Image 1 (cartoon, helix red, strand yellow):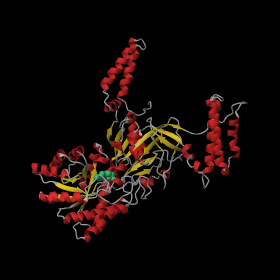
Image 2 (image 1 turned 90 degrees about the horizontal axis):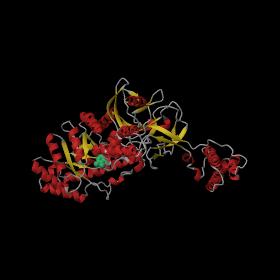
Image 3 (image 1 turned 90 degrees about the vertical axis):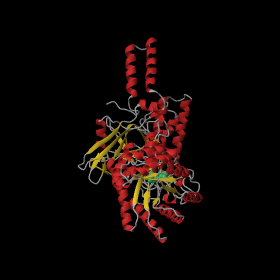
Image 4 (image 1 turned 30 degrees about the horizontal axis):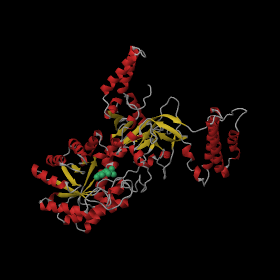
Length: 621
Ligand code: PLP
């Protein structure tokens, strides 16, 4: 388990059973993920599958809210904390529903950025007084929905992102007779590191400049509505790795807050947006995919900085709002898939080819006689040279396929021997630095990177990946992972390491007749809806699991993944039309005497069953 860093990135939600299996755990209970896989197999829910552990989501909402309450208490802050969950981070109905339900006791609200998202929020939130923060560009319809939400008892804020939306809000609020709750999003200058740092800065596309903020204030004043301006919104970016940057962002936010108050705004809420990072690598540093702070530290530093900065100006403490998405949902989802096959880059046949062995092959064979640490580079060069010579001879027809096969095997044998020497050397020649990767196994996983882990492909995101069983056995192979799309980008060859990423993952040798399952962890944020239909691999099966207090668990929800008919219809094929066309083709084949009518029927049955089947690789059961 140490090999995979589970203790470092698991946030206390994952452990290891005595039988060498990864468990999902809460304070009361722990369940082996393999038991969940078994339950899925019994229900015909095949791999790949996304498993959501409800208790983890519940626990994260609880942790976030209690960490802020405790920080408020400790620092002596006079305001309260109100969390909202940004729907865009995972819009799946089950997830939003669970957040609304688990968050009700804290009045945890929702952040929305579009009309579909506000509609989802209005349907899912039940707790009166819940906060709805409306970001994004708002047209009249969006504004009407938000105003009606206020009337229904929600605290629904319109955060002004562009000056053009304010006249719409003013006009619609007068037309409907509903006083709006207004916020302004300030353009932040605090520069943060990490992948999402273009959210702030002069060229950021988000937020109002100082001049635009003044324009908003002036217009509201003129319309006698400045008392509606109650919230300041400042979002620095997602996954902020450094607490120092968060602190400076809060200080800048306080400056906007103070001066907007001076301008006469009736501010009561300060919304610091998202940014609370997830430690994907477990390295606890300010690196892009990690963070140099804990949740408690984040809350304390935010609350303390607000108090100190505002106390200097004698300003009443506002309600603190944050829009933590990633940190709320990342932990609760795990992608599981089975390994379909492996390729090893190892010699299998070092035999001879008889009396007429070409000289180049003999030379290749002879390299191991002078292989030693001082001559690794020379041996590496020679191996490449003689293998190239043999390949050239093969192209010209001067050596046969068997000879070439022996040469390729000898070459691999030499490279493995070089690797063994290099691993013990202090200074490795530059050309040999990637030898381990070039000899690593390829494990073919039953999943689509583009559908299930799009950020790995798009932005080099790393997620913790490990086998979910056989952890009482030392893994003996080093591998990279390929998915089942026909795309050379569909691979994972960068894995979390301590402290540096590694290019291979230790895995077990496959056992004959036995499935081997890997889990990709912390995938609850952004992955599900950003995924696409590359090669027409569709949504995977999904199960929501609730752990009981007695060590058992319950499948609370299950969603069968897309069928082939589903994905074809997404790209405008009409399944009925397809069936008809196939039938016509088969009928023509009968007419032409290539198949019998009975064969035609078998073919149509196979075709139709397939249309209703899963898009991923299905093993015969
Ligand atoms: N709020 C806003 C306005 C955002 O744009 C984002 C994402 O970038 C978030 C909240 C969520 O951020 P995170 O997932 O880092 O918590």
